[in-house]
Image 1 (cartoon, rainbow, N blue to C red):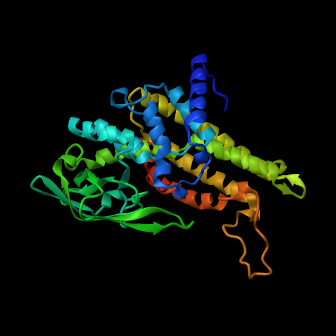
Image 2: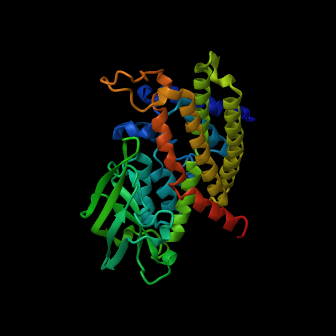
Image 3: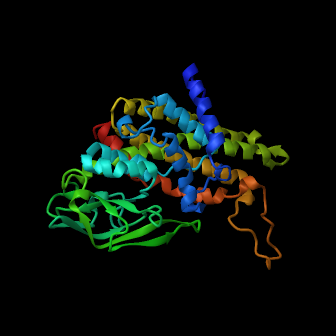
Length: 396
């Protein structure tokens, strides 16, 4: 959609655009699939933005934020998506960071926030368990106070990029007698602590991005607990609100939709570009309309957040619609590339197979489609988000 920019906004946009052109590693632009990157490649753009002072647009200025207006934050997100920069990992900056500067002690803020900004600490998330996914309050990982330490035992699953992380934030049950939501606490755990182990989970596209994480008598200093004991559910919900706003991914979806439009302009059906097919054009238009509506909702959420309002029901709305749109765009990409989207070409000894070697734009379309199946599940499944909206907005 066309936004009304002030001269100051336009000057800021030009500054961001030029900075990306000058400073972003050229060989890492346009890489859509994070799971193929090495650790240092994932952190390269983070560290460049940190040196510039642009790594935490959403944070308060006193903790290292930029002080940008909602429109400047919008512009920055748009320009990064347009250039297809490396996606900044959200676990430290967008998830545990806000929890620490909102609920943490002065000592925790001083200790952890600078290292989140610099990426010295790579964080991962210890929420979901094999028997506690959508129903997170049923988690079984325990933390028992022993002197000045808590001893944690249990298992977390779907721990994204735990193979690279050196810190994990963990929800654990500290009061087994309390009702489920009331007996949980929030811990910051060094991944190098004895008793922490990681086992990879192979995904449907063959990549290795998530893990099982095990805690076997892991001793965590008492001062690594956020806030008060048994109030972890409050902190967890706060974190998830920030996560869900980020999951919406409006700017990246706009870039991905443009990618599909380019494919449709090149792919021919009976000699006519797919983009001129009425049925396919209608699908593209419908997604674009929905994405524009979501963009306005995101801007309202950004404006509210800049005035000190934590994300509420709009976080669930953004998460549902954002992930649905992401999935629809990847479905259209696979439809557009047709047989070129086969994950693997024919075997050499199959004389009847059709050669599927195709144009460069077809590479990865199916991988991305498979990856996006998970977006409607993580961060709280979309079914659960509908329940949250029904309760918070409709009072049901």
